[in-house]
Length: 65
Image 1 (cartoon, rainbow, N blue to C red):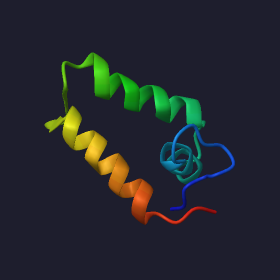
Image 2: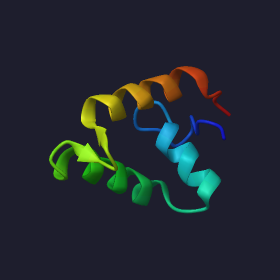
Image 3: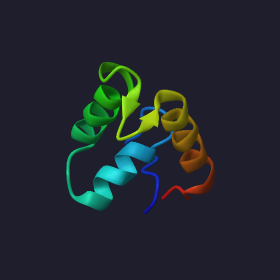
């Protein structure tokens, strides 16, 4: 997986994930945002702070293309 730096909004993590999965970046972004905001801070047993920390770590360690 690579960060898609040509189709990024922040770090390109979600657009890179979408490219790897073969779906649109918008779909992955919407799913992430719904999980982050709309489900009361808990998504799949992960808090919003943990999701933000995971995103930042992915941003730091996944190479851009």
